[in-house]
Length: 560
Ligand code: GLC
Image 1 (cartoon, protein in one colour):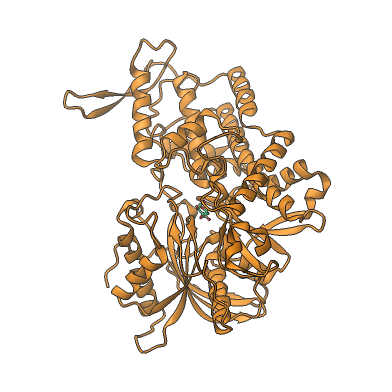
Image 2: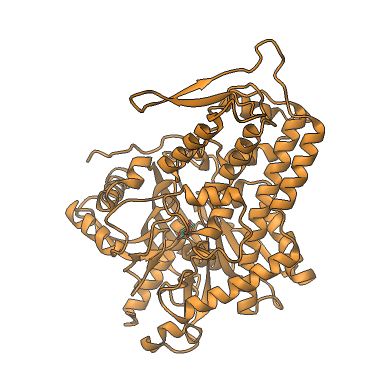
């Protein structure tokens, strides 16, 4: 079968997967993976709309030389046929490139510090508002933060065993794994990753799922060497978008997040659509469970460390899951579960403060990101935290300073003016630059954007990255604190399994979350400790498939 995209062929070097779960567990890799989160391309997300914004902005800057003090190096004119033509100029060919002055930089830093800093008091207010919102989501269906019951009933025993397929459609790649659960918290993983193109994220929903089924088939046949005569393997499908579930193998996509926009799938049962792709393409696998990455992470982390009570993904998107008891989920009361029956909840907290925008201190950059996205008004919390957006906040601030004439006078800045051109991975790089001269930052600006920088500017950029990264970490801590407070975990403390490119690769992200928890709760905040989670969408999904199988065998199968 020919695949629309070929498997990625760089050996895994990081990205958190695959990895060793616990002493004695082993991960096998067939060598066709990448581990880098930087595969996400700049134009992701806001896409065409984002670019429109950049064009308009250029247009307005250009509506004058009239714009006094503007020392832009580039602009756009429209041809009579309506096509935009970008031009680049230098204001003074003979002068050295003028750069921002020290005093200006100090003033700017103060300004952005006050815009992007969250005080402990402000954080406590946000925690309170999130907690209320989580409660509302458990009360009634159809709330903005949907608090989705996942039909994952309680914690794993750690003794789940067997071979399971796991398919993971996240924000950037498609991953296919065979997970061999060996009990005692041990497992082996064999996996392949496929890169998703921007087109695939926007093309017809069934076509996207057909592609997933083709990749799975390719993996089963070519990597595992299995044939039609081999027994059908159970499959856990990690589909990391908000889906309301009526049972474990059902999930109606509420809305796309993370820049996806494939039509004809929102409002539909993704599990049924995927099962039809498997059938049509004759794939030797049986869909057993549809799960969210946070739920998988919760279960996988608890499998190896039972002290883990909450899981959070800080990646392209941001979301959390935790274990609730049925008695605390009024909207499910008609199902008649025992009050103390555990039920994992996929919070979808990325939607907190959507539409109303009453609680989060959004800056004008957050508003631009929101309004130029393919889902204006939605995922407000996520848009201030997640990896998909942080680089764009930085870029928008730089564009503002180019417009005001404070930065890059006379240089050609058009590359930087493209929406989403500044990847969040660049912020990580800038923050971790070990050299006095900040050579990595020189490299980022000259290599990717053709822009020269002074040491003072680079120091400023690094500080700006710290401010943006710290704000994201502190907001994330507010979400964690809301669950901790709701569940009363502060006294005993608990572990929080965390995964995703931001958590794994952004320097100091975890330390900043921990410091914020102390700001919120005082010294007791030290009892809440995040740690690098187990592979939720692979191993977690397999454990959930195993738990589901065991439940069904006992005749415990619940429909909403
Ligand atoms: C987005 C998705 C959510 C997912 C998160 C992390 O918020 O809506 O389902 O868990 O990203 O991948």
